Image (cartoon, rainbow, N blue to C red; front, side, top):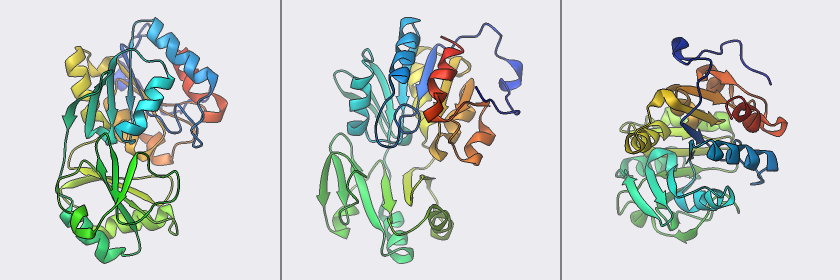
Amino acid sequence: MAFSAAERLHGGDLTPDWQPRLVALDIDGTLVDHAGVMPDSVYDSVQRVLAAGSHVVLSTGRSWHATKPIFDMLDLPPGYAVSSNGAVVVTYPPVDVIREVTFDPTDVLDRVEHFAPQALVATEEVGVGYRVSDLFPEGDLHGEITKVTAAELRSKPVTRVVVRDPNSSVPDFIALARQLGLHGVSYYIGYTAWLDIAPEGVHKATGLGEVCARLGVDRQDVLALGDGRNDIEMLRWAGRGVAIGDAPEEVKRVADAVTDNFAEGGTPNELARWF
């Protein structure tokens, strides 16, 4: 296993016999590859975590309706899931939304329309799907997709706004985010020309904080794994935050450790250290 030279256990607070009471797992690039395939080794390692009596909590930028199939695929027991980058927390099964943080998308949508009029825009409808300005590339969004007018996109508070331009690059979208001058919201840039905009101060760590408070788990007893820019707050917050080897450099820099690439078994290799 390849770990960064900067590996640190939050000032040495974690003892050699430390074992996580809760494991928080990103989905895409951590549990499944970017074609949606989950290796058997990942499934088996999650089962070992459950057998040890620790909680497993999915913590993802996916909407809940796109998170549920992974929850089911892993055969997780009834419990919590953090979706929409922390804006939505559910218990399942049965589905009960226990946290839903929204914001008025009007200012964001006005700015996107001005600075990137060619971009596709979507607003999330929790548990349903998305309302979109126009159709996204196939496979980008899951659930019920409804094309609506600009006025309808602005008509009610939302948990998330997605901005997408298949003809742009990640650097283009980094520049766009700066140009937009977003205030009062949080935003995350994906591996493609994809910008996720969430309520201010909302991220995976805030969702996990809600879960831990309900379960009586201290953040120092959380192991978190992820590979995206939207995992940065989660990796900083957890007792041990581990970046998958494929992660961008800015994600690796904040992590306590960097495990192997996803295709080389990064997730099961890290879980095997503790379970």
